[in-house]
Length: 413
Ligand code: PLP
Image (cartoon, rainbow, N blue to C red; front, side, top):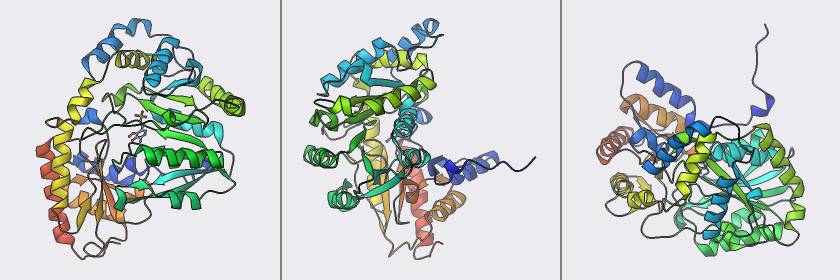
């Protein structure tokens, strides 16, 4: 048999979070080493579990969950999502405008595949959650990265974004709260982004999967709540807010269809419906989990991010300890559970950040993800997940500091 290459469509598709460095970590584990993994935003791996009432709801309904549902999800589930959205001032959404998926990941793929023709451009933040870039590339589109500014707490640079808009730009991706930076966008900035989308007739894709994990009493505003005439697809789900990644339960909702919007979007919505039908439906137990989750508030998430809560404490530990290392700095995140950490090139002249995280893994058995894995254009950042308990985080960052101490001034190529 001839060699079987991967498809051409995968040529520019990368997802480094689960890339070759992770493969090396697995190899070390197979050899009996313990690796401290700060690479994946998977709360279940760090002792977090979904709230009892969600688990119970899913378990209680298992006997009714053997069949397919409507391809967009059970109507009761979509009605519950509609109500929740209305509570967040996202109005004009009908259950028909809502799609339940096997996590937001599946829906990002659906949303991009239904939209893009070869050469169509999509504005995506840098750094980004790299599935967005991968999904655009896989769908034949061209990811165009706009810079987020570390000096301003990692907010998008509007001028940079404007400069990158061309006649081929179809859409604008907003990840708020952001992975990997933990930035939370102020309402004034969101209004500017809506105006930009309105002016250039762009669809907004708003990934808001961390919208309930907000620190310091701040609040999150959905960009979809700020207009009724700019087509906006909002993504959310149980993975992070409800610590239930494994349930693979997420949704997307189309809003901003007032006026001629619904008419204009008809072709795209047809496309979404075709792809949604082709995957039959999302997993049905996960849909019951969504029903359970949306019945009442999310007190568990609130407790985790409040002073005294586990995520709050872990954030304090990680930020303080990292910022105390010479030549290392990180912006304190306002949301989620990631840090996008800067290595001052004057101290650490890293030219190849994959090599850098690989060396750290081999020497100190700590696993991070290199900044370039998030489409950051320079090799001077890494992402750290602060989900482990404080003791483990302390140990991991102590090892990172030791490694950096040994490699100060070394050019990593
Ligand atoms: N969007 C962002 C910004 C994420 O960080 C993640 C996972 O880390 C996802 C989407 C994927 O979420 P899901 O588990 O719902 O597929």
